[in-house]
Length: 114
Image (tube, rainbow, N blue to C red; front, side, top):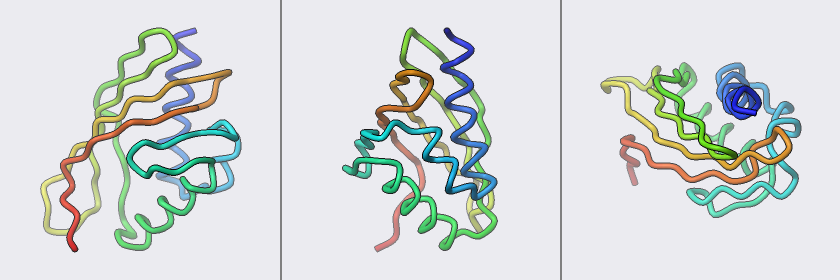
């Protein structure tokens, strides 16, 4: 079971780095909920990813640590390709259901400019 949870998380980061927006339909449940975005569904992920890729064309996420506990996965990543910055870190926690990401919580050290 742990392998399935890890695979689901890794698929998400691989799709993000490859700009494979169609993969979100297979990675996230249809009722996926993102707490940071306060949004539901894979299409909300696509919109967020596209905005991020547009703002930072060379961005890529590197998984630094991953811990699995039952249906929960906690991941620490570094975000590369953001000009003039030491790579920010992200901490994300996912709930996995039937091999797909169903819910996400996250914190980032990336400061958002207004």
